Length: 371
Image 1 (cartoon, rainbow, N blue to C red):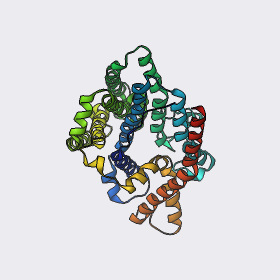
Image 2 (cartoon, rainbow, N blue to C red):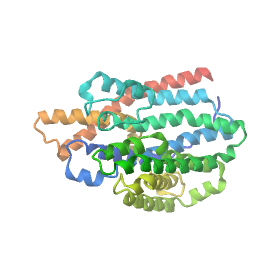
Image 3 (cartoon, rainbow, N blue to C red):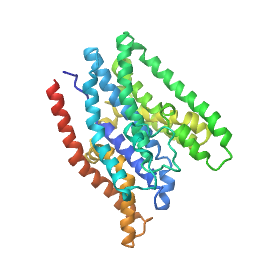
Image 4 (cartoon, one colour):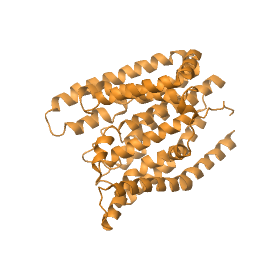
């Protein structure tokens, strides 16, 4: 199937690199760590929201391009691409976690079927099943990859593509509303209990229906970028202003989310974080922004490794600290942190070349045969 040529946005590599660094520093707090990690890593959880905005933009932009080009979506091609991009490194990570208990950063894993059905984020009990808990975001993205093209086909079938924007705004309102309902039903009655934080993660932080802000922001940007000339012209003319505006909104959202489990953070915090990162993503695809023109080999390399780093980093950090402790190297030292991060990159480099690249070749071969 012929398809339009997709633009290469160099600026997004910088944002993907930023996102994975934020996640690494944030998750490093669960291990022995230097004191500064607590201070500078406290908002690293928003790196996942940046990933959501990036995924929403990049994936939906490809689909919107297909619609504009041929007024249809090739589901088979789309799902084949997603399968060979996601499943091989994910399957390897599952083998490590389920086949080699030493790799686990904590004691207990959720059921295997929850991982293979990408439903592990639903009712995820962080206290009792915290191992490989970070797969929750992959579950949300996989659910998005599966369902969003089907929704788009419905809009195409009824010739209502122009109404997608109303659908996106409705979903954004719904996800905020569901957080409000979850807060009132589950958090308020348990505010004075020791396990309120566990309930907060289960009912507000992890569920798909309460965490749609980032994906919807990315999809919205992609939609208007493809279907509104005025919007695209505005982006290309105001890149640096969008970047500064994004920094302001992100900074304000960090202030709102200074207590991550507070009512204001829970209800509107995720939305503000997503909007702020959305503005920065818009700046990164703007021809007038410094991000668009700044090419970095380091960012490009780290961006290409970000998925496998995300999947394996907790297990790698856990194993590295265990090994260094036996060598009488302080687990909470700067050197240990540096070695842990370097090991995460090295292991991900091997995963990319031994798993991801061969998978990509198989994918291209299959698509070539089908075309």
